[in-house]
Length: 281
Image (cartoon, rainbow, N blue to C red; front, side, top):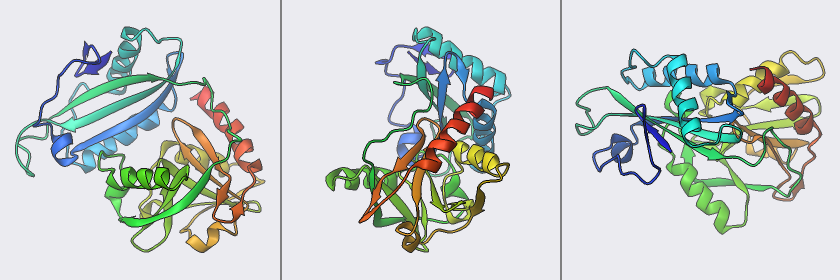
C-alpha cells in the first residue's frame, strides 16, 4: 500500500500526473527510514531534518505535520501493507504541489509514504568484497543545498551507472574543489590509527542521520579521535579503513580502492555501538 496525503491506495494506483513538481523540477525532499517491528529508528532526528530542509526550500509546513502525525501515517501504511512484524525501509517523500513554472503557484506540499521489506532486523556487517572508485565525470557543489536529501540526484544516478559498467560496488564523489565528500549512497568515514575522519558539511556532503549519530558516539569514546575535516583523494590509499554510513545499511566497509585493501575492525566495533543506539532511540 502507498500512503498519499493520508489516503491509503494500492501500489499500482495512478495518483500523480505530469504536472508533479518533483518530476518537473526535482522540487522534492525525502527521508529513508528504517523501521523494525513498528519502531522507527532515529525518528526524531529524521523528522527534524525534514522540517529544517522544508524551511530551507521555502515549503509551507502544514499545521498537522507534527512528529506524532507523520509517525501515525507511517505506522498506518505499515499496518495496511500487513508488514508490522518485518524490518522495513520506509521512504517518506514531500513535494511542492502542482502549478507554476520555476516559480510555484504556492508553497503548499503533499507527501507519499512507501514501505519495502528488508532482509535483516538489525544492522549487519558484510564481509563481502566491496570495491570503490572515484567518480570524476561530475562534481558535488559545496554549499547548503548539497547537504539536503532532495530528489536532485543525477550525479548519484550517473555514478551508479558508471560503477555498474566498470564492476565497482560503489563510487566516491568529489566536490568542485576536488575533495572527497561522500559515497553514492551515504557518508564516508576514513580510519587511520585511532583517528576517524569524515568530511564536514561545508564540503557538500549529505547531512546524514547515521553520520550524526556516529559523530555523537565517537565524541564520547576515549579510544578514538574524531576529525571533521576535508579528505584529499591522496589520503584514501593511506587509510587503514574506509566505510560508508546510511540509515538503511548502517555501516558498509569498503574492502578495496585501486590497489589498496582495507581492514574492517573499527567498522565492526562501531556497528555494534550503532545497533545499541538504534535500539534505545
